[in-house]
Image (cartoon, rainbow, N blue to C red):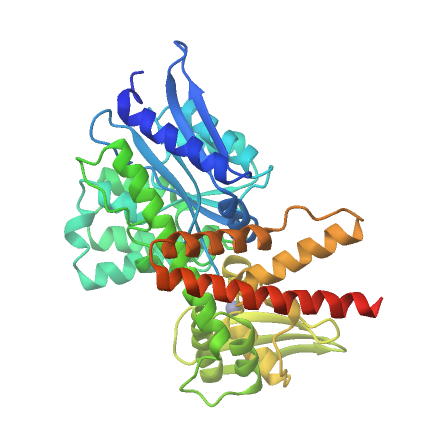
Length: 463
Ligand SMILES: [Zn+2]
């Protein structure tokens, strides 16, 4: 094949087949070209399907990694978990960057995820990918990862980026403008100030403004990728430790190691969240306390920031009739922080013009200020997104189980079961060479068996 050929690809395919034997939900497809030679590979495992079901509202499709020999693209599909860390959804090797290849890979991805489409898809480039996204994910919003654009551009952007004022202006265009009008004004001022009217890179960037400025995407959930301080940390999002000499098999190993590392980290983060609630420099008011109980530690920090601003804000009632209110909430002295908030007391509906909740899944300080003014002790349920909860996975699994039971279906595939099999399996593999470790596994299994049997007996005695 012109792209994937030789021993290197045979080894990867063998490894994928091996995985297929162990994981009955493993999904693996190859695309053949006109000469019946492999030109694309796609795969995902059962955990990835499960993670996508929970965190698949936002996805980053990264095509920046190339192999040494055939200039193949290693393209991971990455999401963001409830701890605001990376989670892998799938991966593909692509022979070229044609519209047809992207269409195949997106179509295959969609099929592997049982038709579920993300709300926002972030990519590092436009053109061919954009056309493929429009066709395969017509209802998803295509967004551009600016860090890639700025990395790839041989423009003045790199040079003036060091300028503090420019950085501030640019950041405002990126995520500080609430309305398109505000964006246009800010952009125009910045372009004039730095004399960039004829710069082709900035011209192109402007033509793509709807794909990267948050002023144009407030109605689409993006997990706050561009809107918060996170945009910096999403830089080099995937962090594959690859270079120009990385081969196909090496890429596959890097991919595997990365997935393992991310999953281990997630387990640790989940564990840390169950150990206790995070502390705060603030006196824990009821609302803040509630946030600390429901959110992961990371998300609690975001909520805490909003809460801090809320407490510093002025609130003015503009309208009140029955249960309906309109407020003006403004952070003292901060331009652009002045927003209108609509509030219905009967149904606990709070809506802010800055649309932060739509975009990131947590309430903005304007809304928090209004809830606080009405002595709310808890965040209304509808404003706590499951995907940011500390028990996000557990909750989704339980809901899935319940739905199955209600439909009278036997639940023969529970994500929990697969998850635990994998965890035990990994532990067994790790321990099998050491006698002491083997004994621990055997002993814990013996103890767990007795306890589980007792629980079952007790349960049976009830009926
Ligand atoms: Zn707001």
